[in-house]
Length: 315
Image (tube, rainbow, N blue to C red; front, side, top):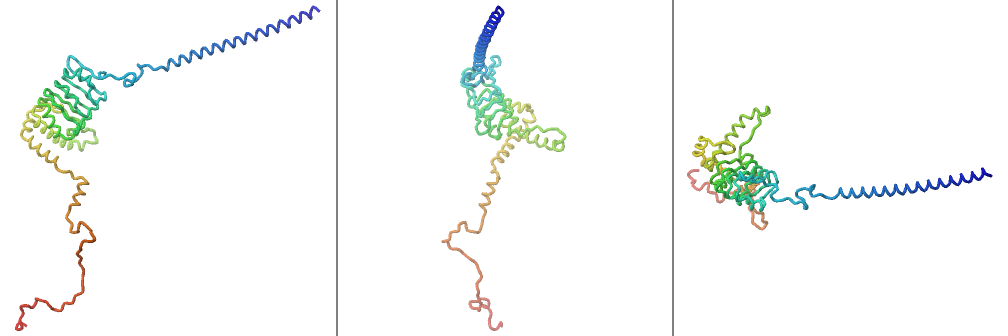
């Protein structure tokens, strides 16, 4: 009896322990779930914070962080030089003009997209203007008058008409001393490779190019007598003497050749249409026509004048 009572007590104690362990495991599970939800909430919050935009990371031309006019322009007070190189500008902002135009003597806007020079007229005191590697050409470029300009760099642009260009320069810049036009079609100077593949033609080609380039130099020296340096080469006394003697003749001959009409395919076609032809230009069916053909005719001597002066005694 005593042993049976002990058995029941042990069984009841075991059931109580099992139930409490189940409760403990459930509570720990709930705690783990709560911890996981908190971690997920923290992670989600961190992800949201990471995706927030920062103005420092945005491009310079965005709406949130707009570009300022003077950000690419650098002005040096000591040399009075304003520089903006390789910034894709096609005009100078008005704010820059208001700040620096009057006190700038050297302006360098190389490697941009300038096609016209209307903004340059706001820099009346310029002495040096560098316009290398832009998109200046004959049709749209008008050079503003700058009475103090002495150096003009126009390398690697799109000028083709040397005569029109020279006339503009000599009128706009009466004090021009340094001029460079390398890299334009108007300048005949070309660099010839000295590799082995071109050794056979290099001597002949160099002679021809040198002659053409020398005529180009004589032309510019004659038309702009204030020049002392042309295309990074100093003008010597011999060049100036030849330019004085032949410059006007070379200019007249070259100008005459330029004014000659071109002989392209369309003009050749039009000239062929203007050639003389015996055929009528119209084919109006109501207009009378002349025709030529053979007809049968037997000659009987009537109306003949062949024996007019032959008498009977001559027979």
